[in-house]
Figure 1: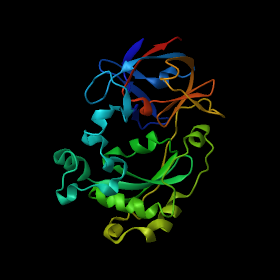
Figure 2: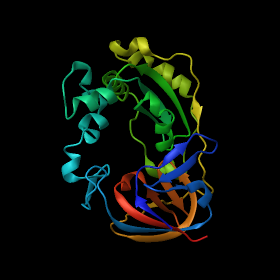
Figure 3: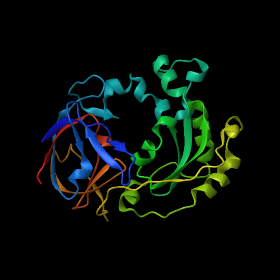
Figure 4: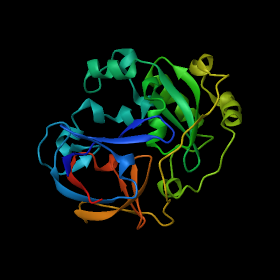
Length: 264
C-alpha cells in the first residue's frame, strides 16, 4: 500500500522507459506493476503550493495559488510571452530569470501526429516521453524561452502544436521522416532564431512499456470515480493504461492525494 500526493511520473530514458511515482517518503517503480491488479483510491486534495485540502483548479494548484505562483504564469503555456530577457517582472523576476534565461529547444515530436513544441534543454528527452512521442527531433537551440516561443508561434502556422491523446494511447501512429520535416520548416524560423538552427542531428526514438493498447480509451476521473481497480497493461506519456480500456492521466491529477494498493 502506497499513499501520497500525485505529481507527474518521473521517468528514466531506457528501452523501454522506466516510470516512477515519487511520494514524500516512498517511490514506486510502475513498470514492475504491469499485469498486476492495482487499486487507486482518492483520499483528499493537497495544493502543490500551499499544501491545503482545497479543490485543485489547474496544474496541481488550488485556485488562489494558480493565479499567484510563478509556476502557473501564462508564459509557462505561451513561451512567447516570456519577458525575463527584458528585465520585466511577471510574477517573480528571480524565478522567471532562472527558468527563462537558459537554453531552450524547439522540437518536433510524433505522438499522435507531428507537432512542434518548446522545452528547456535540461528537459530533453523527458518532455517527449511525457507527451507519449515515439520519435522526436530538435529544430533549434536558443539561449532563452522568448526566442523559443516566437519560433514555435511561427512554425505552428505550418504544423500542429497539439497532441490527440486518444490517438496517442491507441498507438494509431505512423513513423515519419522528422529530419525532412525539420529541413522543410527551416524557412519559417524567425530571423532572430535562424542562427540557432540545428542542421545535423538525428531523431530520438522512444519505446514505452505497453503490453496492450486500448482501442476505446476512457479516462478515469477521480472526482466522479473516487475508487478504481484494474489490471495495469501499460504506461505511455503520463498515462496508466488498464485492461478494461480505462486510462489515468497522472499529470492532470497532480495535487490529488491517493492510496495505491497492489493486489498481485
